[in-house]
Amino acid sequence: MGLNVNFFKNANSSVNLEIGQLHGGGVIISYKCTNKCKHCLVACSPERENRWMTPGESEEIFKLIKRRSVDAEIHIGGGEPFLNPDALLSVVEYAIKNKINLSYVETNGFFGKNPRKYSPVLKELYKLGLRSILISVSPFHAEFIPPETTIGAITQIKEAFGESGAFIWIPGFLKILNAFDQSKTVKLENFSSEILRGVSDMYYLIPGGRCGYSKPELMKKRPAHDYFITDCNRELLSTGHFHIDYYGNYMPGGLCGGISLCTYNELDKPVNIENKPIVRILFNEGIKGLFEYALKLGYTELTDGYCGKCHLCVDIRKYLFKTGKYEELAPAEFYIELEK
Image (cartoon, rainbow, N blue to C red; front, side, top):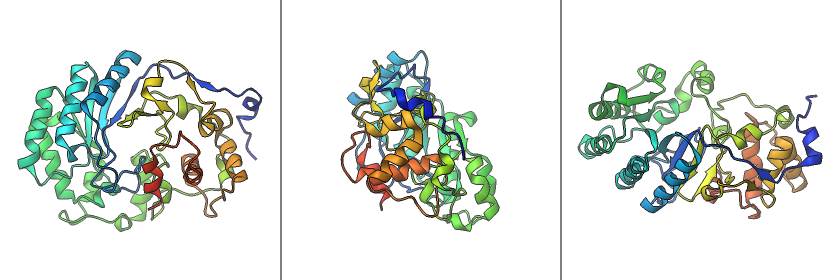
């Protein structure tokens, strides 16, 4: 039986979180995507709302980031940013205007067979001052995008940004995809069990979002109590990989999809979590506290277990979301999408 490291915190629970200097993160300009990837932390899909960050929203967010950081590394993502080139160009323009240290824009490379439309967009992004595009290469993306399309997108990016401007994440998967028909998508179950076992380490998977519900399973599952020894403070307070979406939700650096710790304009002072019981419990009692809280409200532990602390947290929050009582469970579409 593991020691609960949160034992001594229960008698002195905190209702204020001090969010430190922002070191690095992302700006989510939409949750709409061409894919519905089985590892997605924020449950993007083609069915998500066709809503995009506006120029005014992006400028206010970038002003906050500049105020709360010395030189934070910021990337722009989604969803799939290239689904709306005008919105993407606008957000990049405002990032450059506000002297943001913009490291890259993320894409799944769906546009690889359409250079006539997207090569000019890439060249315009370079002209604005962007110097790198991160292109996702993985078994998860290959379920929706044929390898030859991915290669085409990489070629377009290199033509616009130079050889070093294509940030391939992860290049090792290009060799793995060579074993398949380059013109067709590849189902996850068609990869060998050896590759699937290694995916979690190669791709640095976090078992939040859809990951815990993926078939075939991506990680070994364990009962809830196996995760009680750790707290959630590092994830909730981390500013090394935070995200701010177009609703204004601030997602902490632990990449806790579906948790809005606060809105970005609340970051200039301690964040009061007294009326955010899920965040308060996670901070003061960890996942053990949230599990026990949920049991009292009718939550039932999954019989086949959980592939990580984050999967357990997501499954509990998915249950609690249905009550409509928790403002920190945002955006709502995250939970609606996970039920589909």
